[in-house]
Length: 180
Length: 225
Image: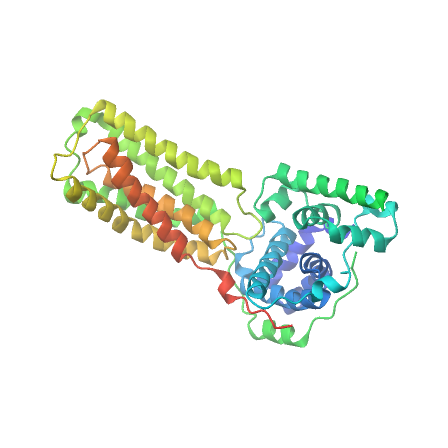
């Protein structure tokens, strides 16, 4: 799985910090798909997630000096993307609510741990109904391959709290899929 | 999982290409905090040099004067280091770690206060309480300002996503550093004074750090749907 290639991403990030446009393009090619998926899972709206993805990359660009090569790249970029989503949510919570996000089922990624329980649409529907904090920890660990220590540092919680959220999410998900 | 290639929009490519100058990566927090150390050392000695060492220094001995203050200053630097770590995206502190940070500061303050009070109990004469309080609160806050400003600049460079938390931690560290120097001058060891005026000064500096810390959130411009 290409998530394990942290050294390569770190090398690309270092080249990008040195001013390489091809390095940025490679980073975008590698990170944009999972980030879009993550932002879709947070916002539950693919169109909004695509906007947020561009904002996230702009933020990554503005703060590229803050990346240290001794740190893994993916938790750093995912945390910035999460912040962009939080800021967007704060902005939109001050405006009249539209239920656009609730009308259609978002294109949520399906964790391998529950893939065999039902067809992808049912799994997505069940994922969509999970508590947001459980869904996020579950997806970060089971889909994007972050360790619980990394999930904890990204969300500002303890690793065991991240593990608990994820495992409760899996239990909820299995219960929903087997009871439906 | 959505893993299909995604075309980079031209607007993003243009924005990045326009501003693609080389940047110097940040050093780890343990190295960056060294920038604050000289200011902390100056603050440790400043009050004692300018106003004189506390009158009860001979009774307290070197451990409860210089050593205790040096340890308090080092704790302050450790808190600033924690704040610089908190400021880096993806390495944010958990609630438990934050509890340990604030708890350690409180325990250190309480321990030094009560040990000093036991060895050399000194109270403020009636009628002077308000004056001494105002001097200690103002002195503590004002002397912490250079450390707050420097730490704030260092933290802002790291792109803190929870700037208020980072600000509160480095503010607390700056307050402890300033108080480490101030207690070498202020000889009133009465816990009601130390845990009142001195702790108030530290809390105000932490509040100041939290209130005025730079937020990258203000830079986020999200397009309208």
